[in-house]
Amino acid sequence: MSFITDRKRVDGLGSSHSGVGHWMSQRVTSIALIPLSLMFLFPFIRVLGADHAVILQTYAHPYHALVAVMFFIVLSMHLQQGLQVVIEDYIHGHRKRIGLLIANKLFWGGVAVIAAFAIAKIAFSA
Amino acid sequence: MATENQGAAANPANRPLSPHLQIYRPQITSILSILNRITGIGMILATVLIAWWFLAAATGAEYFAMVDGFMTSWFGLLILVASLWAFWFHFFNGLRHLRWDAVKGMGMKTVRRSGWIAAAMSVIATVLCIVLAM
Image (cartoon, rainbow over all chains, first blue to last red; front, side):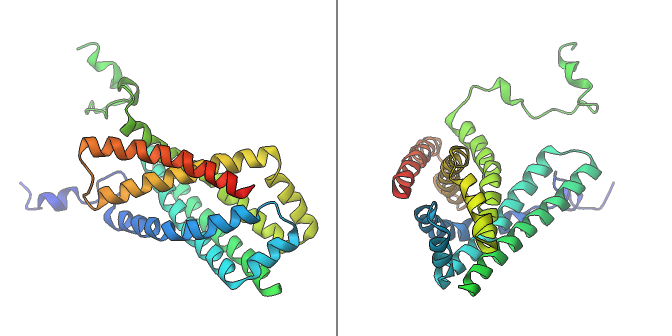
């Protein structure tokens, strides 16, 4: 008979091997995206389809530039977190799973950097 | 016993498997739960597309004309409108999830009602945004 407690025996044995921390940070990005997504969406749908000059002028404004950068950073985090759970749920096999989890992080890190760079370039060159 | 062991190959330890989705009658609760994941995954495309659009705008007029041309083509707009609905669905259904996380609104009646409200709101908000965009 083992002297390990029940809690210690099962800790980390779920499909993802961890949990509460990831779950909590997913709620944090969810809540942050409530205002950010709306602040990004409404100006975006109004300006979409306009001339290049109008797009540059819009996102050169500090408000729109900062909202867009913050939105893309938090959105990328949230997508990374969501996809991580999907990978953990459906992808079996250690190598494949670890490979996809790493690719997922790098991909969304890349998207956030590209979007932030592009918007910053627009904001700084206007 | 013979029928019970049919899944033995896929389940070597013969542990009880999670019930398969196909044997359940679809319900508003299960459909919306699955849709939450599908809409989340579905928005990958629009996110990458919009990031690419910003990169093109920062790069130059010619490159922007190409990417913007794709975004505002019928195919691009189809992706964007589908993603717009996906966004609003994920948004309103996400609010339900956040409420449940606070241990509120968890009665079966409330869960079903909030589900229908979220589904209806997602359609209304999508239509309003399309009108606003025009």
